Image 1 (cartoon, rainbow, N blue to C red):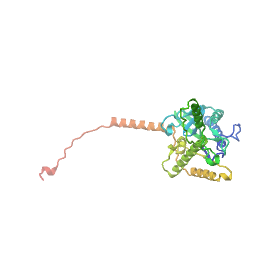
Image 2 (tube, helix red, strand yellow; image 1 turned 60 degrees about the vertical axis):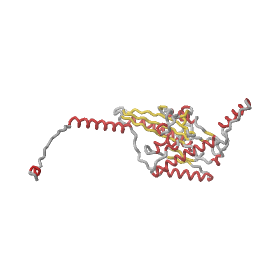
Image 3 (tube, rainbow, N blue to C red; image 1 turned 120 degrees about the vertical axis):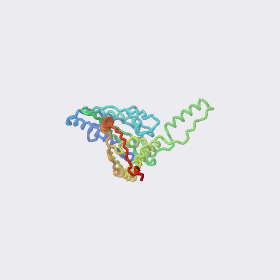
Image 4 (cartoon, one colour; image 1 turned 90 degrees about the horizontal axis):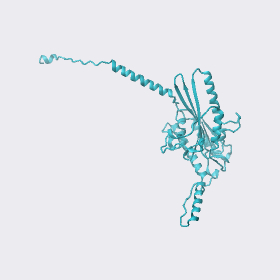
Length: 332
């Protein structure tokens, strides 16, 4: 499930809701997790299967070009130098949960680690894309078959115009700290030249650029899916992370949030156009259940047994036959 829209349009509130324990103000994540837990309880009680289930959650943030684990105090995931869809979540925490209360504790713990800052349009603007991942493992003890499913709940950073957000273009906290250290060094040693930092983007400006780049990559993937062409999932960490949900192995829901102000009409129209493009995507769902792999292994084993049986039973008989040519014997 993706929540898309411009900054300050209510995406985070839609996805997370409020901290109050009120079902009317709960967001998509609490509602989805509560429904999942209830379904598992009903399934265990009504279906005559010896079913073993486990639910785990992860919470990550795509900040700049890095994926940070919000359940590990912002530790970087996938430290491998090779970028691939299968490795973007390597090293991320996957915490087992027993009930909705456990999920909510982890949700708000990770929410406290998210990067937020004030801009002219939003006093608590999310400065990165965040994805809450729910993993469900089901195993039937009678047949020893297992199924693993994942639910991606993405709170996308808001697309914003730097002019409206009034982002500064020449100040960075990190660079300012470097300059301060250089000034202190110069005071100690006048012979040491000052380190030149040059013109840099501000932290807010850089965050806005990376957010918009991720959204542009997401739009490119949706357009490619509509055209039936090669989908450029590798163009950003966001699309690499969401590839399994966008590419046909699951169902995807997109919620578009919009502002009611007339001054943001162009951003609202663009958001609706993105939602319309997502609506026209048609995928054929392919299950990734482990039972399919087990079935293929069973078929391969049967084929090997048939081949061995054929080799044991077949007999090769060599016959020599002489065919007399009557015309040749008569000399004609």
